[in-house]
Length: 212
Image (cartoon, rainbow, N blue to C red):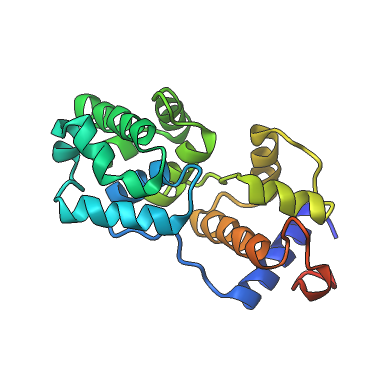
């Protein structure tokens, strides 16, 4: 079984085991972008609380986020932790969107993938995982998101020993078709696997991939 076949088999088993994950939770692309910034170093439950605050205060709007006082924004997103830092990062990405793309996510999304990724990575506080989460889940671009779960999954199942973000991303994108649905579900399913079985102390005997 070659690498593409093995990855496809893993995807099918995980999909059968956990079902579609339907990521990213968010009603609009803007909400997904905000969530991608807020989820850094915190749980999704905390992010949800922060997003509810933004909605309650009617701040989940590009123009309002652009104009809101940074301290007021920080107070609203306090449940997400590191609120002053995250408020500054949100301001940075909203400023880029508002000043260079007239506040239009659709206009931003019209940029080709390679340049769009460079644009996002040029925003202070936006790293590869956050940028790629925005690209895949908010803008519907075919790019594979890598996180700590991805690295653990690859190592535990002896699929790939690379450590660097770009190396791991290339491993998936080289061996899988460039498909938004596939990249979306596969990443989400890996997260689900690692949260339930492929833990720091793995439950290998119960893992749905144990017979692979």
